[in-house]
Length: 127
Image (cartoon, rainbow, N blue to C red; front, side):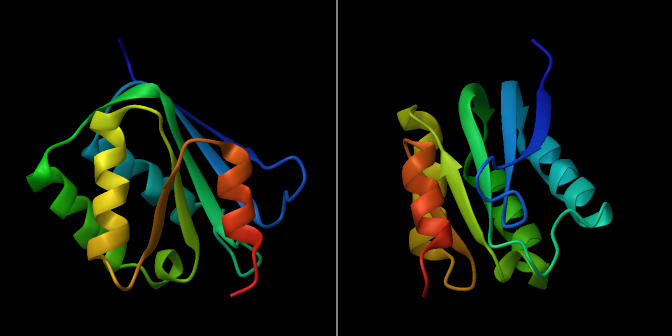
């Protein structure tokens, strides 16, 4: 099945939270391409507090090597270090990667969630 990523603003916080909905099988190259699209389209701006990466309807095709490549990429972009990266997933095979990101990447704010409500609360809470 082909991968599809759709983009939308959050209903309640349209200026502050951007959502990426992933469907089908997704690998790290497509995730990086999607970040490139967000950065090059200026969809991440000073008002952006966080991005919700919704993996609930996707199969993440990732291993430790591709995860490391993705983390290197994210760390190269100051705009991504300035915002919170929430990952929605209910699949144990997928949730392991944002969990690793949360525990190993001190410069990135990555956190796994099982509900959009919890992810939104984390993104908009004051530091």
